[in-house]
Length: 193
Ligand code: CO
View 1 (cartoon, helix red, strand yellow):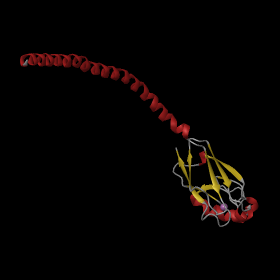
View 2 (cartoon, protein in one colour):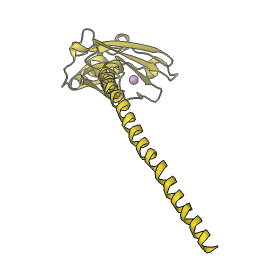
View 3 (cartoon, protein in one colour):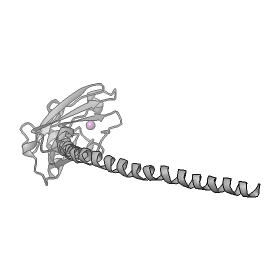
View 4 (tube, helix red, strand yellow):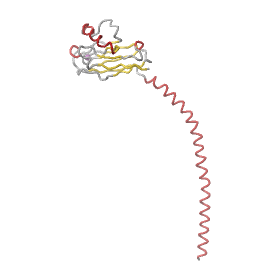
C-alpha cells in the first residue's frame, strides 16, 4: 500500500512537472512575441503622431491670438482689468469698453485712451481743457494712439488700435481721461509678438 502510494505520488509529481513545463514554454514565448508585436505596432504610431502633435503646437499660438479685448467699467470708477496684452501679429487690435454701471455720463463717464505711459499726464491735462464735448481728449493730440468716446451706464463703445504704431519694447497705458479718474482707471498695455 505504501509502495503504491509512493508510485502514485511519484507519477503525480512527474505529471505535475510535465504540466508545469509544457504550459510554461508557450506562455514564456507568448508575452515576448506579444510585447515585440506591440512595440512594433506602437512605434510607427508614436512616430507618426509625434510630428502631427508638434505641428498642432506650432500652429496653436497663431490661432489662439486674440486681436481684441473687452474692458468693463462701473459706477465705482474701476476697470475690470489692469493689463491688456496686444500681439503685434494683429494688424489692428480692438478694445471694447462696456460701462456696466447705471450712473450718467456726466457724473461717472468713462472712456479709454491709449498712449505711451510717459504721455498720459499731458494727454489728461489737455483733455480736461478740451472738455466733455471732446470726450476729454484734445483734438488732434498726436500722443493719443487711439481713444473711445465717453460713455455712461449701460453703454458700450470701442476703439481700434493700429499695432504698427506700437514698439515691442514700448511702455503703453490705457486709461480714462474723465477728470479725476486716472488714479483708479488705468492699466498697462503690453506689446508682445
Ligand atoms: Co472714468
